Length: 113
Image (tube, rainbow, N blue to C red):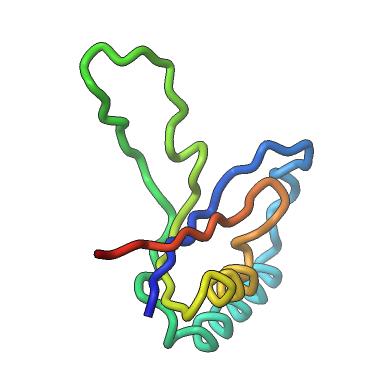
């Protein structure tokens, strides 16, 4: 079955990505929704991935910068199995918190020989 990389990305937008932090009750509700989503799609999850930390761009010597840091572009990832890209998009669209104002999810097929 094909595998797909789902990258949570920052989007150029006029929408505010900040705002008030959720209350403890709202956080509990979000975790419950996330747990239900994980259970629903557990047979399609290859790697739940997670939030990305620090890193470093590796380039050829003399490459001219400045370069955008990956953490500014990509907030996290997961790898899912699906029969088609539409199936992988369904998993991503239903993930609580993955797609929100200021961010989206890029779904990319992982091609194997």
